[in-house]
Image (cartoon, rainbow, N blue to C red):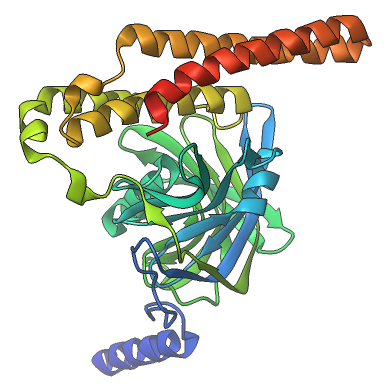
Amino acid sequence: MRIKIFILALFFGHIGIAQDGYYGRPSSYPPNEFKTNTAYNFDYKMTGIMTKGSDRIPLTIYINSADGSIGVKDDDMAFMLARSVESRGEKFNFAVIIPDKGTRIYATMNDPEGGHKNVCVTSERSLSAPALQLEFAQAETFHRFMQNATKTPGGNHPVFGQQTLYTGEMNGKTFKVTISKKSAPVKITPAHIGFLCGIFADDNQRKNRYITKFVTPDGVTVEMERFSPTNFIWSASGYEEIMPPSTYNVESITDNQDRLKEIGENMARITRNMDYSNPDAIEMSSLKMMIETQRFNAIKSGHPERQISEANAGSLINRKARIIDKRKECKRLEEMGDKIGKATCRRQLRQMESEYKELYNRYFRH
C-alpha cells in the first residue's frame, strides 16, 4: 500500500509539473545569431532601476527567452544615462550581449575620409554584469546558494506579490537576492534570463520564478519593476565590422604574447573600475580603453611599432581631464550668471578641444 501511495504521489507530482507548462519547458522563440549583419529578436522586456550610491539609473532591457541574450537600443540607453547617445556626429545605435558568445556594439561613426558609416565592434567576452549573471545561474551554483542562504521575508512587490529575501555567499562574497513566491508563466531555455533580476528555473520548487531585486557585493543594486511580453526586432543590416579577424598578423601575435597579455590585463582593469554612474568617468575610461585597443590592433595587424607611446597616451589623458574640468568651470560660471567669464571660458574650452582633437586624430583616425 505504501508503495502504491508513493507511486501515485510521484505520478500526480509529474502531472502537476506538466500542467504548469513552464518549468522544464524550453522557449519556442527563435534564438539570436551571433553575426554582424542580422536581425535581433526579443520576446520580453525588463524595466527597473539600477542603484549605485546616490545614483539611480532607469533600465530598459530587451530579452530573448531562448538564449538569454539582452539588447539595449539608442533611446533607452539615452534615458538610462540621462544624456544624448550622439556626440559630434557619432552615435550609439544598439548593443547586444549573447551569453557564452560575446558582445556586439553597433554605432554610426564619423570617418574623416569616408564620412559617416555604420560599424560594429565585437568583443568575445560578455560585460561584467551578464558575466556575473552567467556564473550565478549555473545550476549547481544557484542550487547551493538557495540551499545555504538565510531566508527572511522580502515584503510585497506591487507587481510580483509576496517575496523572500535570500542572503548567502558565492565564491566567498555575500549576495542578497529577493525572489517572488509566485510562479513566472514564462518558458525559458537558459537557467536564468534578464539582467541580474529576471526569471530563473528553481529546481528546488520545480517552477520558474521572478528575481525582483539583486544586490551585488560591491553595492550595486538592480530592482525589477516589470517583466512583460514584447515583440521587438532590431535590424543590423549594413554594418561593417571593425578589425575583422582576417586582417590579423599571426607572426606579430606570436612575437608579442607578453605585450598582448599586458594589454588584456589593462582592459580588464579599466572595465572593472569603470563607474557607470558618472558620465565624466565613463568618458575618461572610454579613452583609456581606446588607447589599449589601439595598441592591441597595432600588434594584431602586424605593426607593433605603431602602438601609442606611454608619453603620448599620458598627454591625451591629461588633456581630456583638463577639458572635463574646463567644462565644469564653464558651467559654474554660467550658473553664477557671469557672462564675460563664461564667454572667456568657452573660448578656452574650444581651443583645448581643438588641440585635443588634433592629437586624437593622429592615433585614432585610421
